[in-house]
Length: 137
Image (cartoon, rainbow, N blue to C red; front, side, top):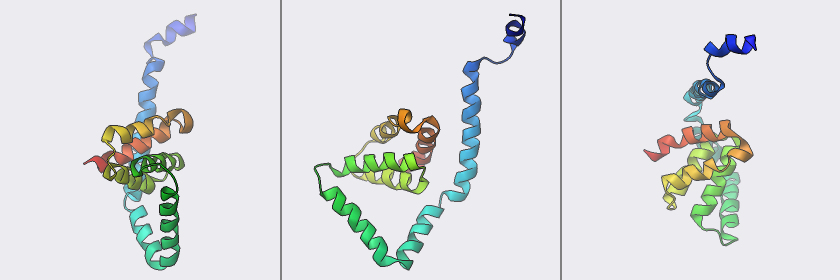
């Protein structure tokens, strides 16, 4: 009991998540400072270097979306979730913007990511939510 009482002046466990979030934000800033523009630039490189291949990939996606009853907004929200799960910053931005263009609200885009927490974990959800903030501006 003396050990517990001696440690009572230290921060409680409730404060530890904010320390984890601070570290994660620092890590996010370090990563995104170098990655923010890379996915778009890389896509343009692939498109110019392998035009037939990229056209085929894009056609495959369009064919898959047209093959069923899901609307554009729903398919973009699904793809947003998969992009977040794989940790693909560029794809998260792309599908968030496409979902917004297809009529999704900011709350719907954020909710699509929040519901992933029990599947992909809080760190990936928090990172994806941070990545999309600039897409709302």
